[in-house]
Length: 467
Image (cartoon, rainbow, N blue to C red; front, side):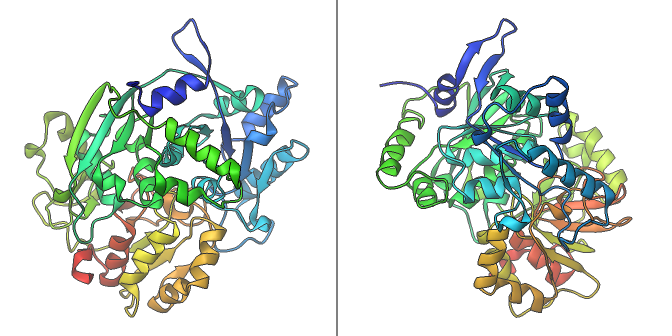
């Protein structure tokens, strides 16, 4: 019996050659692109008289800078119109499939890849976006890359990349009431630190992961990068195979059965070896909320803002910087912290199951007075499904804005931004200074159900009180 983990198996299968500088030339099975990191990449191709090597392995959409309140062209935002027009121009004649808004399949790149069946176990996947690790939920090796690397993949379908070590993170026990995937990954990042994963890929395992849906696993893998890891993945199993069956780009009929047989073979061997192993007790995890300026600065919703003196020495300086930015007071309870904005969306938490969990909280209730609340589905398909199931009416009746698909308030690249010192309860993935469009704004990361509860109360609330 072998002792290989999935990461090493997939890496070997896609290795073209080992380079003299220690990096590996890795073949990329699936390349996903969007409007923000591609204009310069295509320009660099033209400068070198190069063409797209494998257009059938690259798929495009628009998400980052796309407005979610209107699709009327030209967009009022000149930069948005310019970037999206550039992508449209660059794709003409390229052979690359483009899921634009008129296709009915547009959405956040890390939402549409899986829902279309493009993301499949055993693949190497690259995208010019740091949250490409999302696709690891299916047992892939998925990396976020920069613009020059986007150029390299377009031109050669290969990347020159340093192979990371592999750490297995086992989450034991079972999650309690009101705890979801977002709470698990925030707890992992808090425990191991935002730099704890540097040089590693994370394999997530254990009974808590085994019981999760694919959408929950995607939320976990999505935030691997926030913990410093280069990638994150879950071994493919029946949950993954069932999700992929009958998707548009999934294998069909006998080919699907053959694919499943191969997908099973690339899972980590029972006695696989790892460079490091960590075990966390899932039963001890509570609903989490971030309080600072990086995703590792979080506490349970019934906890208090930590005192810098109680933190490890290397964390104190960042904690002091966070308090200087937020104005929060060490020792005070985080529950009850007032908010101005509630945002449910992003590639972390904008899938149909996320919207269902939030809708359960807001149904029959109203958003607190003065709170701006918005729900932004992760894709046009998620939006259609939600509307067919009546979720849009639940949110609208509660006082939420119901938007089109896109990245929205996850990042300050489109019209959905914080203003001034606004505090946002957000289901997104990053709480850096200025991340949501205002240098003075404050982001409190939490799960979608927690955001829904905060919207109803106008302050950080414990979702368990609603369940």
